[in-house]
Image 1 (cartoon, one colour):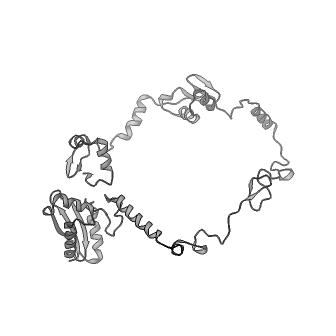
Image 2 (cartoon, rainbow, N blue to C red):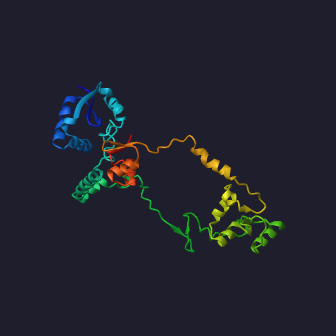
Image 3 (cartoon, one colour):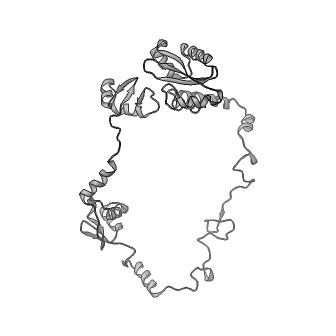
Length: 315
């Protein structure tokens, strides 16, 4: 018989789905492994041990042709059955959500280490080394070489000197045969003398005290300059006393500010008091479960959101 089958728990209706070209043989194999406590699915095995053989039933869910067998199985796996660790009919990841994940990974790691340590140096080179053309990063035998200027700084291969030592005299100077205007000369002079000429600093007023710039205010108030600039540009009424000199400060009213925060929350669905199950028992709130099980609320919440506790799940 070809098709999809399930192993169903009559106590809580949780299921394990699978597919086979010979369902009768597969049923016998599952039953034999479960009775011997050696089933490959630890979640199903634990449930079998807890509820007993009399509370499980083997059922054929749907018969189908071989070419569509995996597609039909995937249809049932998409229902997220509790006892299936992997949720892909084609195989996929059967380790990430396995309760014994750490033990399995440790076993695989030790096995690989033992295999590698038992190999000779020649075997290691033959299996793992990628000399010359076999190495995707090989560049024809070229090695990266650094080139240095006489001053000690690094330079390019085809350059005579580094940027610092490059000759900029005469025509090699980008400003050759050019002159600054009188206005530019005066502006540069004033900047060198420390005079404020209108664009290198922007006066800012905080709590009716004027500062030459946000940088000066930062040093005096011990507040980061970027924070001061953000407050000066913010429309939050909390920072109405931060503004640039000569510019009108625009701020939201308290009513407008409340409306701004309230608008995104309107018509938003919240999952407060979302029902969930622990070991097959339904609870309406975290507090209720915490009192009954004597477990901290945050611990329960963490287990519900974790993929490692299959007996904790939202409905």
